[in-house]
Image (cartoon, rainbow, N blue to C red):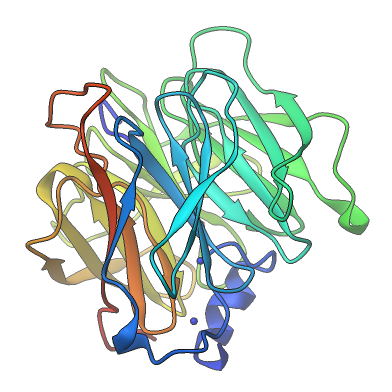
Length: 313
């Protein structure tokens, strides 16, 4: 998410790590190389989060008013299918029930949207004071949300596929200490599924977080991930968007997520401060948030596709 602030059979490990299916898309009717590499978004849209699936459809959230744009990845065409509440839509994930979970940024909330109709199925007040509900992931039968300005995780238990009445607030303790700027941002499960990984944008540190909220800094052997934003896990490979650096870092982790190494960083001329990412077929899709560009109602925006960094395992 902002720093200030969605594979088939080949993605079995990702589906295990994200049991609700939020990052991976389905199969397309066209070869991946024929799919558009750029998706135009409405002027002034200010994109941030992206989720892909079910099927070849991407959902992209607006920081401007929280609207959700649905794009057909086969054609690159789309439209706003769910109007926002006037506050941001940041991190997005879809589950296997055809529901889109949305982190509400400065609105201090989260909502769940029907991916077929755009109807809001549920809304949750997560914070009552200053907040920046930034990103989310699924694991252990729950949706977990970060807050970049308050040292807390928000948990939505998803038992028996039903939406809960309210969220749980889990204070963060241990090594992760909040400072000025944006703190906890992207979030994903650990490779073994027994914890969470959270990147701190302002320090570039990566943390393993127990479900109790206890945090421990991941040993990156002298490396860091400044401007770390959206994250994606495939097996023991972790991808991290470093937004203002216009790169995606590729890390190799141990099973517990307590130690890892940055193997390489991938950039692309199409990048203009990408924020988050999702996958479809053999491509990685990233909305260009353009945080370094003056925002006006006429500012153009897009999402771009690049080949998946390989190998992922």
